[in-house]
Structure formats: C-alpha cells, structure tokens
Length: 112
Image (tube, rainbow, N blue to C red):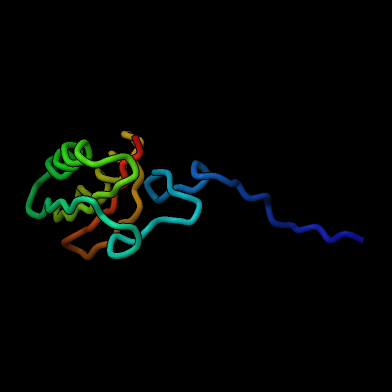
C-alpha cells in the first residue's frame, strides 16, 4: 500500500515565492540585508522624504550589473511601502528588508 500526503503540491520556481509586498523572491528565500551575497552599492537615503528614496534607487540601479545588489537605508516611513512596490513594478528583486521604528534597510537585486 502506498501512503499519500495530504499536503497540497508545492509550486516550484522563482515566480512561486513572493515577499509581503508581492515582489518575487528566489526559491531559497530572501537574503538578509546584513548578510549573504555581496552588495555592489550602498545607498544612503536617510533624511530624504518621499519620493526621493525611490528616485535615488532608480538612478543607482542603472549603474550596477544585472544580478548585483544595492543596499538602501531610508528613514522616510513611506519607503517601507514604496521600495517593495517599486521593485515589483520595475521587476527587480527585493531580497531583504529590516528596520526599526525610524530606519529601514532594503536589499534590492537588479533583475533586468
């Protein structure tokens, strides 16, 4: 007799795994902004108000190669929503996001 699992079949592939904002993640999961793969560029957007953190990220990502990562630090509360949404809309990968009440750090991989 063969045993059957009652668990639903898993969806394989990068498109199946997404972060809280809906941005695609790799099958292994996001990389922490403080560890993992090397960061090609550090972007300090602390003190900048919306929409400047996203504008600065958009400018900076054009100067790195596909597959490289940018770490961005922001203090504007809107960045917690804006950066993940921008990544999804622009089809880049949000690899990590962490923060406190007043500062957030994001790890973004250029995907195209």
